[in-house]
Length: 362
Figure 1 (tube, rainbow, N blue to C red):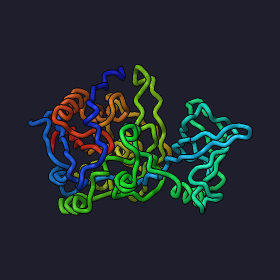
Figure 2: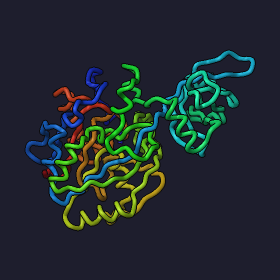
Figure 3: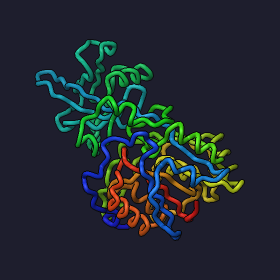
Figure 4: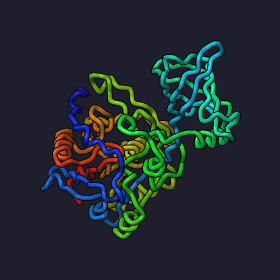
């Protein structure tokens, strides 16, 4: 399909700069193609109203790392240059691929000191060497530390990597340390939050449990590609970014058992959706999965396992809005987004949610 079919105009004031407080008071647009009404304005707190006993709710338990680093490049015979780097993928215990500014002013062999002015990590610094420059504009950083010690150092000197459409409007601050982390965050590795899960609170979980639904966790480490618009003119020309994920045997068995008893699988966010569909076979059975997935879901995709999805409102021309169109149909997706814009819904990572029910049921 042509990528411009997924374009739309969003007024800048609809981009949420902070999450709702409490988180589950965010608005939720219920989308039920073929039902009457097709669109219904509700709140995330109402999510349990749409769950039945035996339904299975799947969340992503990845934890966002403070992947945004600020440092200074030093070069023999050259002047110091301020550098901003965002870690995007771990390659080895001591190496990360990263996006850097100003990337063009960096050369292989350059030394970068991230953090403060101390002489060791314990004093608030972290040193790295530019080991390679990649064709996509990223660089490879070889750190002087490795493994858990490197993780601790990054945690000490790094900042939360808030999305670029928020960072362009305000600076990251202390609130983002909590705001940009989900209630389920456990396995460190993401450089972006699985944002649909940001809406959850202990009270919402308690009411979901009271509805008879069960909660299940998977892990997908979200990469920066989630924010990138598709630059190709046609979806067939786009190469999807790969992300590491895991569905344990225990979780796969539990989800299959729920389906076998007539329950539905509700995924919270596009990350959980993509991972469950990566683990599901043509027969609809979910199998244990460990590794990278680059599944690209567009409107010609047939869903194998997922029955309902809670997700935020996504960027124009992004793979995520294409996934929504695949799940509920392209025309219903366009009507839902037009309604959300007209009714002043808040968009993107800290914004409101939509509950997608392609079968039209509650």
